[in-house]
Length: 282
Image (cartoon, rainbow, N blue to C red; front, side, top):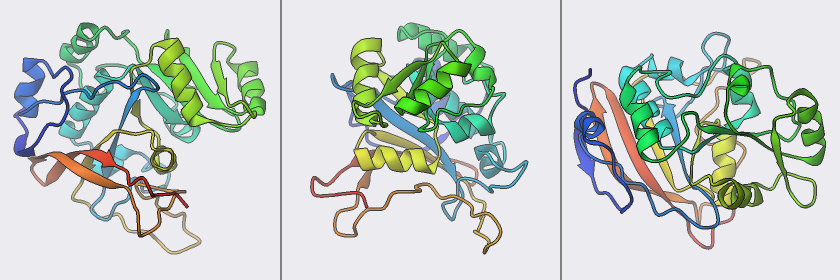
């Protein structure tokens, strides 16, 4: 299969179910799930970033995380683990558009039966639900939307009308004022559809929104040794880990490091989000 990760540090704060032995043997440690809130799913995200904090080259043929990880097999393996424990995956419409052939299913990146077995052992359906975040409701034709899974769209009233004209199977979640209400959508997903755990695979803007609304618990971060840079205009900007959201210097959210692993020149970090009660996004 694979040689194990090198465990550099681990301090597990959670007390929920852990990983099966065959996955722990490669991961060289455990990942226990947090207590699931009654009001929303437990939410984590997974990114691969360059040394200088970029998540994409933002140019044709080099626009995904795979370009940042250089196709690193351990990054792919860890993605399979974090997907395997998610009842639903949160995507921005732009992520879906950039990966139209992606299926978001166990074994898509690393073919190993342990991932599907983990889903079954934790009483999850074979395919995670998709929850797509889009104000406009303008969704592309995409393979992931044709598979037998629950499909949710977190959107506006006009976005719901537009999207359901193309995809009538979508369950649209619209705020009371007809606008996007991510917190309310998460309550609905948890209390009415049984979504206990959610992985965000959206980009920097989705992550920024989750941070601003304090709807995220943990982050998995692969730190790639490459340097991407950011060209001057008119070349397209290369996005960073958080986009579209800023925090005041007095009260920024911070991370509590849970674990750190190494494979060659790659570092694999897991951390818990800590929010200052006085913090406000700007």
